Amino acid sequence: MKIAIGCDHGGIALKPLILALLSELGHEVSDQGTNSESSVDYPHYAQSVCDLVASGECDRGILVCGTGIGMSMAANRNPKIRAALCSDIFTSRMSREHNDANVLCLGARVTGPGLAEEIVRTWVTTDFAAGRHLQRIQMF
Image (cartoon, rainbow, N blue to C red; front, side, top):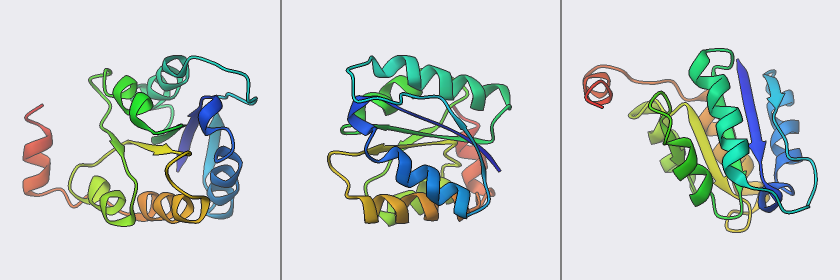
């Protein structure tokens, strides 16, 4: 699977761990930045990742900021994106299984690295259940 990833300065500490995990799991990654702790505007990174997912160039995307809130709000402005802010393994699994989330948002300042890795692992390995869930997604 090809996964686009982006973060702002608040998510920079978590991004290398996610990149390593995705590589270990055999995924191709398109890193959209940022690569520094210097303050940046998260909507630019959200748009970059979401454009790749919406166009089909990437299958899914992962966005990381301090809380995950800003990234999820920015990502969901794109009508082709179903971004889910997940802070536990259950919501990660359900975001894929029931909602076919194509972008995962994480908060590096509120989710520890070990848990974040498990959230990502669950999210990339969970398939969409379709059925009645597909009908609901098609409503919006």
